[in-house]
Amino acid sequence: MPGNIKIMAILTAHAGKKDELEALLSDMAPHCRAESGNLRWDIWRDPSNENTYVLDELYVDMDAVDAHRATSHFKAYLDRINDLAQRTSLVLNAVEVIGFRMVELAVGPH
Image (tube, rainbow, N blue to C red; front, top):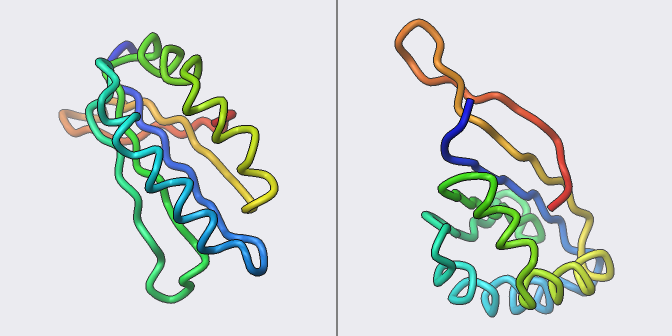
């Protein structure tokens, strides 16, 4: 089903890397939010574990996700993220279910 694409990335900082991870994410925010296909790019922190962050991203379509992944700031993120955190990312498509929207889950690279 074509439409918006949501990406949720769960990042848990390696020991002693929380500040570097937070700086990397904070530095990316204005660049990602400025992308023409980006609708949302927010950073959340787990209040029960200050080393765990969630990136909440929303793009107009998969072409916008592909454009995001081609940017220099995303490539710089990829170069550093595995040294800073354990990462799990989910690429999500909305699914219509009896007049309501449900989320279809697909684990993918981000």
